[in-house]
Every structure is written in C-alpha cells, then in structure tokens.
Amino acid sequence: MAKILVTGGLGYIGSHTVVELQQNGYEVVIVDNLSNSEIKVLDGIEAITGIRPHFEQLDICDDKAFQVCLTKHNGIDAVIHFAASKAVGESVEKSLDYYRNNVYGLIQLLTLMRKNDIKHIIFSSSCTVYGQAEQLPIDETAPRQTATSPYGNTKQMCEDIIRDAIISYHDFNAILLRYFNPIGAHPSAMIGELPKGVPNNLVPYITQTAAGLRKELSVFGDDYNTPDGSAIRDYIYVVDLAKAHVKAMQRLLSGSNKSDCEIFNLGTGSGVSVLELVNTFMEATGVNLPYKIVGRRAGDIEQVWADSSYAEKELGWTAKTPLAEVLNSAWNWEKKVRNIQ
Ligand code: NAD
Ligand code: WQD
Image 1 (cartoon, rainbow, N blue to C red):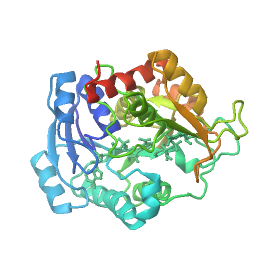
Image 2: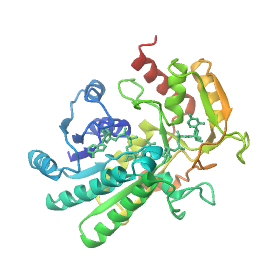
Image 3: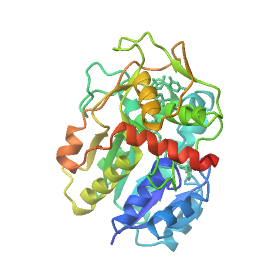
C-alpha cells in the first residue's frame, strides 16, 4: 500500500486524516514541529487505529532535517500538506512569520518533492480565498477575492505556487482542497481540536464555555442580512473532511484526476447561523450555554456556504454527519480533555 507523508499530521485536521488513511491501509509518515500540537496526539491515533504512525519532529522550513527524514523514509508516494500557521488575527500582527511558515514552507516542500521524485500533493486550502462571494452557494468556479488577511493571502499564494510548479515541472500533480469551517472531534474522543489560549473559533469557544472555562459566548453580530441576523457558515465535520482526503488520495494515485491541478470545495452544502448552531448545541448536549450578543467582529463576512456537488460527483464524497452529532462529538472531546463526567 502507498506510503503517504503528512505534514502537520499531529494537528487538528491532520490527525483525523491520519486515522482515516491508516484505516484505509495507507502507511503514514508524519512530520510536525509541534508548534501547534502535542506529541500525545500520536497516542490518540494509535489508540484508535492500533498503528503508531512514523513520526519525525521537524520544521518543514529546515530543508536539511527534512531531507534526512525523506532519506530515512524513502519511497514516499504522495504528500498531504497541512503544516501551516492558521490564526487570521495573529497573521495581521506577525505577517512575515506567516509568509515564512506558509509560503516558504511550501516552497521547501515542493523543492524536496522534486529532488526525491515525489509527484503528488494534496494541499489544505480554505474557503477564505472566496471572501464574501457574490453568489451562494459557492462552487469552484467562483472568483477568488483579494485576501483580507496575510493568512488568507498565504493560501492564495500557495495555490498559485503549486499551479506554477505544475506548469514548470510537468510530472507534478495536485489537488487543492478548499475547506469550509471544520468542527467536531473523532467519535472515540481520543483526538480532537486543541486550541492554545483563548479560542478564536466558534465551536471551541462554545465547548470551553460549556465546560466553565469561559464565562459566556459572545455572538458577534445580530444585524447581518440573514434570517436571524447572525452570520452564516458551512460547518463541516472534521471526520467527514478527513475522509475526503482519502478519496482525493485514491484519485491522485490511481491517475483518475481530470487535470494536473484540481480544486474541490469541501463543505456540507448548507449554511447554519451562529444562533442556530448555539441552539443546536444546547439541544444536542442538554447543556445550557450562556451567551450575549455583541457587535460584529472586524473582518467577518456575512454568509458563506459551499456548493459541494463537484466533490460529490467526482470524489463520490459527501459530508453527511448531522450537526447535532458533530456538536456532541466536540462536547465529548472537551469533557474528556477537562475530566468532566
Ligand atoms: P493545526 O494548527 O491544528 O495543525 C497544523 C499542524 O502543523 C500543527 O500540528 C503544527 O504544529 C504543524 N506545523 C505548523 N507549522 C509547521 C512547520 N513549519 N513545520 C512542521 N509542522 C508545522 O491546524 P488545522 O486546523 O489542522 O489546519 C490544517 C491545515 O488546514 C492548515 O494548512 C490550515 O491553514 C488549513 N485550514 C484549516 C481550517 C480550519 O478552520 N481549521 C480551515 C481551512 C483550512
Ligand atoms: C464562525 C462564526 C463568527 C467566535 C475561520 C477563518 C477561515 C477558516 C475557518 C482557515 C463567525 C462567529 C466566532 C465567537 C462568534 N480557517 N463567532 N463568537 O471566521 O468563519 O473562519 O476559520 O482557513 O479562514 O477565518 O470561523 O469559527 O472564527 O467563526 O460569534 O466567539 O462564528 O463571527 O460568524 P470563521 P470562526
């Protein structure tokens, strides 16, 4: 079975994807510098799959260490590239760090892929590249819009770098996966999201509030042009998202891709408002969630959700897990992390 290098494989989406890869028979080599993850995630992966993936702690920007790793684990067939910094607000404060880690890191990776004759890459892109799209739902032909943060800009630049590398070096091919809003945790509660400090994202803030770590959730805005006034997103279960990577990998390795650089939107196809999500969380878990309405968060867009029909048609993939089940998985994970019965 094929050997897959997973950069950032101890992170949130990476760890869930490693589980699915292993459960589909792939051999996995993880590289991660632990800048936003913990080594014990390896134990969680092993507890679920019964297999401890190969792991090398290194920074992908360190080409010497990276080459040593590729020599040691020779015979890599493809890469899934998750390793990146991802906090939108922090990227405004530390833009050069973001360009170095996300853009330079990708250039190093592609350079080493060439040197080591690795031809296939799946890249973690984001719905952020679409900004506030004029038409909803958003399909892959929607134009990208000028990025509103250095983070968003790195995703656009990385997509372009991959596209150009494919033109320069004909034997490369890639699948760019544009994720909408990944949420939830593995149903085993052995792995999940581990935000450092105060969470920026909605679901970890909700679960930490429910666990008593935060006093109340602030709902950012109830004056949007949406049915209940709160902003709308397409929340996709991280396990469904992970499964899409397996489908994309099968496609690349079997050569059934239709072009050398394919793009897929990965979402549920439905938009959910912040207030709907809060209410679903309370109904699903039976936990009361204190919240207050505050002003809009700077830089937030009003509403986005995916048209995922291309992924359904071409990958044979849909995100089916009901939101209540997804939110329960996030709550079960939070309870496990906080030792709540
Ligand atoms: P994460 O921070 O949990 O995982 C990223 C992992 O990469 C971490 O384990 C981190 O330690 C590692 N890493 C970072 N820089 C590295 C480097 N230079 N060398 C080696 N390891 C490094 O993030 P995530 O939520 O799992 O996101 C994974 C990818 O998906 C990222 O590229 C992110 O931009 C993208 N993405 C995430 C979301 C989201 O909402 N979570 C949405 C769209 C796209
Ligand atoms: C969701 C909704 C908030 C926190 C981010 C990145 C995007 C992509 C996915 C990487 C919004 C509201 C949030 C809170 C709230 N990541 N909210 N109170 O901003 O849609 O997307 O993650 O590529 O690039 O920007 O996700 O989870 O932060 O917010 O009311 O305490 O919840 O205003 O409407 P977002 P989010």
